[in-house]
Length: 356
Image (cartoon, rainbow, N blue to C red):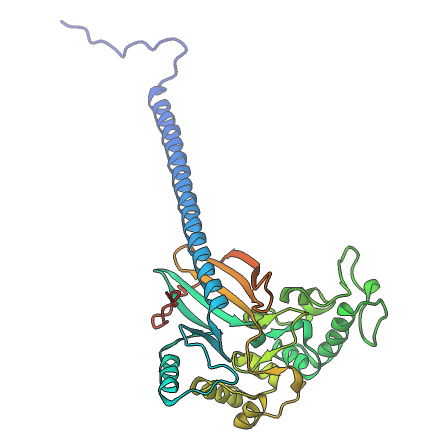
């Protein structure tokens, strides 16, 4: 007769079921360490990829900037564009015979019209370049009177807010500390504020530093208008041939229909006088006609966008061909990154290569 054995005696001090929970805890910790390591590695790879994309874009942007500078310094400037690979015009006292005149006209017809009205051009496989004549933008440093009031209305500023903001802007820019009626001087600004600067605006965004601007301006409308705004106290020129729809309405007091008519008309042939633009559109010009122009200012704002890295590079090319020591220079360069839709329009023309 066999005797059945009971359960094996338990080791003293060792609780039942100790091994399995320990194994599960160790396994969980090890798994967590691996997940953290994999996540960190993925993050490093992503950061490295973004860094490579930024470096690649920077190289592409610098190359595009160099090409634009060469074109701006060597090619002819027309009322609305750079005429790439265009023949030189005849001299002031030169008379062309019919054969040479026909050759000149044929050369002009075959030249590439690189427009300065912010339209897109494809560059490489993923970049877009836009060129904007600064004279076709709303220059906040020189804006006053009806044009300033139209801008404030476009920014959805109330009538009372517009009067206050116009006076505050005048005090912000003037060199003295005397308060104009309804204006604002240093004592009216919060402690620690750098305003008023007692000088003209140096950047478009500085406009928001004027007392009451951030409260009065509709920021959604500001973001819509921001691409059309500039600030340059040294420039007085306004070019009707390169001004955008918004700029035409603000600078020249055109209605929507008149602005669209001006854009359609200059596509066929540029305006050769401000009077012609006013007559063709029916606009009642209420700005100073002396600052009106039909020719670029020699200051070209360029924007280079990249659809792969989402980086944007902006700058300004200044052309001074009569200055032997410095016929051109670049300033106001800036890199920025923002999430946006792919900037590459399908039907954008190719940015022209430098003529040989």
